[in-house]
Image (cartoon, rainbow, N blue to C red):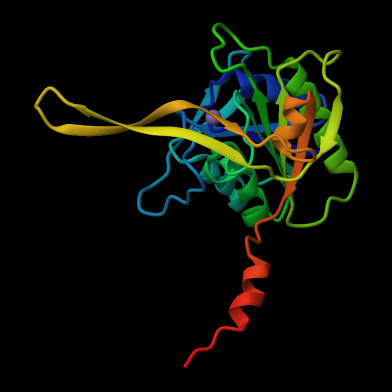
Length: 256
Ligand code: MN
């Protein structure tokens, strides 16, 4: 088994190290990740500049590739031939913060998993930890890493339908504390963003998106609902965003 590990926080992020170490127990792992933090960069394809790749070592001396492209570029390059050996699955993470509801459109972690489906026609798994908002000091990624290993083994052994990626969110609890694993649907994020207008030292205004951390609608069966109830949430996603109900309405429109 050959697993490509990436993330959106940068190749030296501790969440990636925890994930790579755990997945090495399943098979061969190739690490290919961005050289800096691309959180909330969305789905990117870099076309107007060259992409550079450097060989680096992770903190435990695991060899890795560091690239100046976006997370989705870091999946596309290996799948398009940079890595010659066949890749079976892409696992992205472990992101320190949850990716639920509309977050999936912003998240570099989730869009890296989307790229696995698009460029490689292979499954992608995005793994995020719901770390407390004002946590200081190093985070404990061990529970999320073990969940990622179990799930990756399942995906490799069972037949997930083609074109599907998994968005996984793990509560910040020990394995004994969390209640189990729940297959969920995408819920609704509630963003509390506030636009801050400030003035720079030259007297010119600039703008900064601030505000409180997002929350969500607590609804049973959703990613947010499961996570807040202490469950690992796994949401299968596909990339067909068609609003089918709207199609039915629009087919009745008259186009004179
Ligand atoms: Mn991130």
